[in-house]
Structures are given as structure tokens and as C-alpha cells.
Amino acid sequence: MQKKIPQRQCMGCRERKEKRELVRVVRSPEGQVSLDFRGKAPGRGAYICPKMDCLKRAIKAKSLERSLEVSIPEEIYARLEQEMEANANA
Image 1 (cartoon, rainbow, N blue to C red):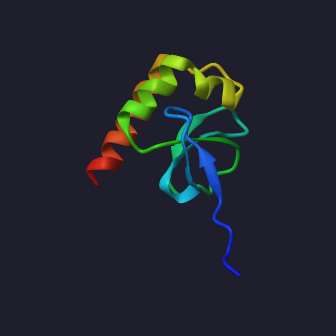
Image 2: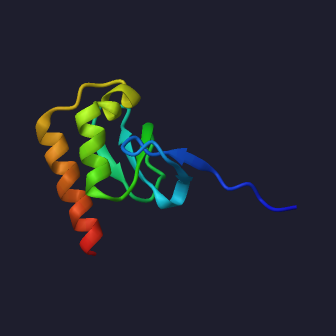
């Protein structure tokens, strides 16, 4: 019997993909919002494709804010964009 592969929905494009293909955006118990590329950080998570257009779409629709149940300031979004660009170039 084949092992079940966990799937999550991207908050930008709304497509369901394998969990390890997506980047987790996590709200820590202290309220900090950050990217979790390993998927192991504690806290409430939302998933997004590792593409800038998906992140921009999620920002415009405020889907990350709804999913993480917190209002996200502009500087956090800017930091998320920088982290995603840095990881894409690595």
C-alpha cells in the first residue's frame, strides 16, 4: 500500500500541492510572522508556493492575515519578500 502524501493549499494561487513543495509562513506563539522553509517551527502555519507572484497575490487578497489570524504590517511583508528572494537565489 502506498504511503499518503500530505497536501496543502497555497494561499496565493489556491492550488493544492504536496506539503514539501510549499513554503510555510508561520505565526509563532509570541506573534512573530516569518517564513519556515523546513516546516518545523512551532506556531500556526499557512502555506504558499515559493514564487513571488503567489506571495504578492496572497498579500493583495489578505489571505495570509485571515489564515494566521493576525494583522501583518507592511515591513513584515517586505521581509518575507526579501527572505523568499534570498532563498530562491540560494
